Every structure is written in structure tokens, then in C-alpha cells.
Image (cartoon, rainbow, N blue to C red):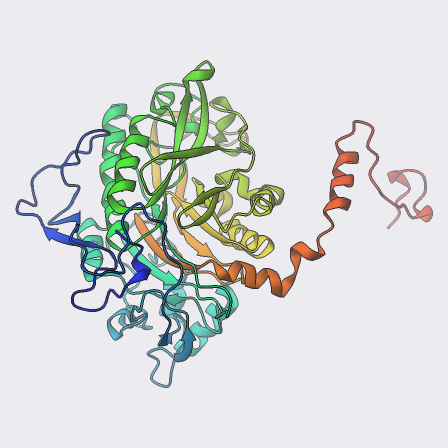
Amino acid sequence: RAPSHLAPTTRPNACSASMSLATSLNPRAPSRVHPTGSVEGPRLGSITLVPNRQLCSSRVLSPLRRPNWSVPRARLAVRSAAGVGPDGSGSEVVTEVASDSFLELRTEASLAMESPDAPPMKGSVDPGTLAGGYETLEDMLRTRLPPEEFADAMRVMQGSNMGAAVRTLDVPAEVTAAADVGDFDLKAYQFLGAREQMRHDRVTRLGLVQNKIVLPTDAPVEDQREALWKRCCEMIDAAGAAGVNVLCLQEAWTMPFGFCTREKYPWVEFAEPAEDGPTTRLMQRKARQWNMVIVSPILERDERHGGTVWNTAVVVSNNGRYLGKHRKNHIPRVGDFNESTYYMEGNTGHPVFETAFGKIAINICYGRHHPLNWQAFGLNGAEIVFNPSATVGGLSEPMWSVEGRNAAIANNYYVASINRVGTEHFPNKFTSGDGGEAHNDFGHFYGSSYVAGPDASRTPSLSRSRDGLMVCDVNLGLCRQVKDKWGFQMTARYDMYAEFFRKFTDMNYEPQVIRDPSLGDSEEDFNF
């Protein structure tokens, strides 16, 4: 399968995704995902996603060939996700788009779901939804505000990409049908970049998967993991059918986030080798099936070093090879997050993985609170940084929409923030460091996954309460364009910072504080 942006997908015989979707003859037949051998299914109700090996265009590349970034351009009429016209249906911005996909970026059908009177909810929701039952803040504002006011609110809240809010992107109807049958939120967007004379456009299609656990936390470990394999493979296959090039799952996606309990068992039984464990082998097969790079965050068991447990993200290349791993750099000790009971700070540094679709890095969960952690990935050349997470509303939700976007701005790369969904209940009560009553759950994992661009723009979020897949085209040329405009790297004072940290890490460090002599000799002399 070639990257979807190399050929049209809206023509009747288009083959840019090099795949088809087939209707299952027996929608009720059980499907079982195996880490080795074949996958029976995976079926989404009455939909089965299968690759189409009949390549119908000379533009389609072999699965192992590096993509060709040089593509034709087209003049497209692009509608802004937040814009409105006189009739309130959406403003049309005609612009020269360096288009790799020739997709009709907006259709009247896709605009219908963005109208002010669109239904606020879809599918079943958790008690953790926003007031009024809304799945996202955008849903709430779209319903409550007049179109002009909603557009202006989105401009302030979510920024501007090439003169408009981040544009929506059409996906094949079969993928939309799979989302309906599978009951997961599906959203698709596109970041544009300016046309250049000397550099061809490099557009990579990202996939972000967020999900709840499937079985209760007291179910057998193997059953829980297999249920999550099956559920997430449904969304991975939908992403493959949508032409996704690089996909990332949420933190510790193969298990409940049991690290609140401080109980070693059964949670450490979910740990497995990063290089050749059953989950990695399954992801290798999916990567080969869809010509897709997959970032798979798991609980790692390092058998070579005494069976030590780590919080690790495994990177599988689009050819199915194990490419490498990154271990979580910063471990939280806040609220219910007692993760140092299970694993300590990672020892892999800040690796950047050069793939066929760009240079990617992974800043796992709590590392997003550390600006220098973000910066190190950027200094190593990352163009896309994934932030697979597991965080709850009572602790971090006001920070969530800020931190990933801040990192994208400061470091001139794309940030893909992914959070799990739902409320996970555990058999035994546990306490936190905040002195509260013992309880059986973390609170609500609020999902809300999104992508932020280097130009301060961002997509709307996935649902706060449902499983979801976000598909997003990112123009990697925008990273350098923003660097050239703002000059953050050029104006940085790395030598000065390095000297400061050298002094700061000395045990005899004295803070550089200039004290007003009139304050006296001690804090007791303060007199307001």
C-alpha cells in the first residue's frame, strides 16, 4: 500500500490507499487476534477491513519503497472547520494548496455535522462527560453559540493554519461505516504548509487511537489483554483503510492503568518483552499489513537485565521490523499516580526514530510537564512527537490542551497528544497522598486526544467519553517554515543555559538573587 496522499481517493477507481473493505458474510462469527499466525477478522460488526493487493495505478509504490515526496499540486476550495458564511454553513477559502491527496477536503455532508444544530452526542457516554452530556468542549460551544461567535471562539482557542482553522479531511465512506458499526469516534483533519520553490511537500498521515478497557479489571490477565488487542485492532484497521502512515496508541494500551493500587499483582503480569513480546509481534503484522509505522506503548519486562519492568513505547517500522524503543523519562508521584512502585525513570535518553514518513519521537505521559524533555526531542531533530498518556480530569484536564500545544510552538514540531478513556474500577480500595478517603478508581480518563501544529494551531479533540480514532495529515514542511519565521533556535542561548545548569547541579550552588538592601537581613524584617 502506498501512502494515501500519493493518489486521489475520491475518484471511482482510486487506489491511493491500495485497499478495499469487504462485507463479512457472517457478522456474528467470533474473531480472535493472535500474536503470531493469522488474524481471523478483525471484524467490525458487519465490516471486515482487508488490504487490496491489486494495484491499479503506476503511482502506487511497493510496500517497502520509501515514499516519493514530489507530487503534483492542485487548486482546491477549502472550507475552514470553524468558518461561517452568510448562510452559516461554513466559509469557503480558495487557496493554492500543495495537495498530495486531491481529496475534497469538505463536502456538504461533512459540514452537516458541524452546523450549530448538530446533535451534541452520539453513542453511549460515561458519567464523566461535560455538563449537558457533551463529548467535547467544541460540541458544547457549537451548540450554544451563534455561528459567527463560535467561529471567533475557535479562532482564539485553536489558532489559525494558513489563514483558517485547521481544515477537516474526508475519509473513505467505508471507514466512516466501520466507525459507526464499531461505535468509536472518528475525526479527520489536515494541516497545510506554504508552497516552496525548492522543497517538495512532505505530508504524513497520522493516526491517534484512544480507548477504554474492554473487560473488568478482575478478569483474567490474558482475557483482558486479548480483548484490548481485538478492540484496538478494529481501529488500527480503520486507520489503515484511511491511509494512515504513522499510528500511535495510548500509554500502556494493553492493560488497565493499575498503577494507582500499589499492588504488584496482577498488574506486573501484563509486562512483556519490547523486542519480541506477543504485542510487538502482533503490531509487526499490522505494520506489514497496512505499510504503517506503529508506536505501541506497553509495560516492558526486560529479561536481559534481571526482569526489570519499564514503561516503554515500542516503535515498529512500516516494513514490520522492530525499530527501537523509548522508556518513560519522568515518573509521577502525584495524586493516585504511584508509578514508581512498578518502574523507575527511563534510561534511553531522547531518541528520534527516522522512518519512511518522517522523524518521530515519543514523550510518554508525565514527561509532558517537563519543558526540557520536549526540547531535547526537538534538538535531536524530531518532526512529530507523540504523547501517549493516561491522565484523569480531576488532576490535569485544564493543563491538557495547553501543554502539547505549548511544546509544538516552542519546539517547531507537531505534537500528537493521546489519552485513554473511561473510569477503571479496581477490586481493592487504595489511598492517595492527598489524604482523601480510600477509593476504587482513579477518576475519569477524559480522552480528548488532539494534534497541535508548530504554527500554534490545533485540531479539535476526540470525544471525552468514547473510544476514538483521529486521522490527521501533517505537512512536515511547516516545521521549517515556522523555524525560519520565529528563529527560536537561532536566538536561543544554549551555551548560557548549559553553563547555568552546570552551576545548578553543583552541590554548592547559590541562586542568583539580588536582594533589596532595604528588606533587612531576614524574612522577619519584611513589613508590608
